[in-house]
Amino acid sequence: MGRLRIARQELDSLGREKTIVLALCIQLFIAAFSSFLLVGLVTLYDPGSTPGGGVTIGVAGNASDDLVGAIGGEGNWELVGYDSVPGVRTAFQAGQVDSAFVASHRADGRVDVEAVVPEGSVRSTVFVVQVREALSAYERVRRDELSARIVSDPLPAPEVPDVPPTYAFTYTVLLPLLLFLPAFISGSVAGDSITEEIDGGTLELLRVTPLSATAIVDGKMLAMVAIAPAQAGAWLVLLYANGTAVANPLWLLAVVTGTSALLVAVGVGLALWLGDRRSTQLVYSLGVLVAFVLAALLPESPPNTVARLAIDSALPRTYALAAGYVAVAAVAVLLVRALVPRAIRE
Image: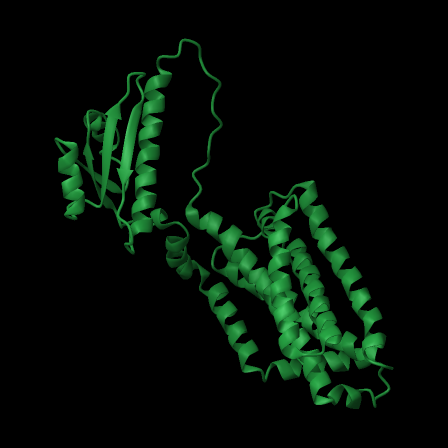
């Protein structure tokens, strides 16, 4: 009961922290209005995925007629033919076209296309994406033309589903962000809480109670670990309300709980070891960033594990990694509990 009382007091104090409340409100806004934000966010994630923003492309060279005839009537672009290469370059420099293609036939039947896009423009990214899509479309047309010359039937290519960009963005960027951000914040706040108790001398006052130092730290860690899956569960409900289906919610919450417990243990351990708020936050932030980079070396990075679980395409290793996060977190918590008596003399 003493640990629960400490945890409840810790949660009450968090409600008075404006920074934490602001972070929760930002996450709440993202989750609650995800369907509206997706349009703008996906535009940054994949500028060629949203309607509008088409580009005008000038085309010249001895293969320009073939290129215009192949893809001139499709895509989010407009092709304009020019009689000469200097003419299309002059039009590009004058701003009459957004991009320029120089298409030339080769002796072996292939076509070389030199593409030019503006530098230093705010819309340069959009131009690059649209140009890439136009060249990919022309490549598909040329491949179909050349495949007609093959005498024997080639192996059929697997069908690629037409997946909207919002689908990939939701499950590979938005969902991992909403699930891992609370865990990251919990670890940071846990480290702050311990260092504030040490700096203010209130930890010694708490020890006047029948609770041991280990029990006090347990209560603080319990509060910080609990709020992350609680937030993640609320975000999943809001995403579902916005039309985003999420499979395996219990496994996702288990991953969040394990990650939260691990990061809270790291934050508390650093606070007990360093005893200074600035040093603890600096080492914690850099350590977490490095850990996430190194996690990319795993068979599946944590964001990929979350994405696979959410779209119900998890492999056996996905479940093994999810369980592994929980196991590693349990070991980390036990190590921190063993450190408490040495850092704080009972």
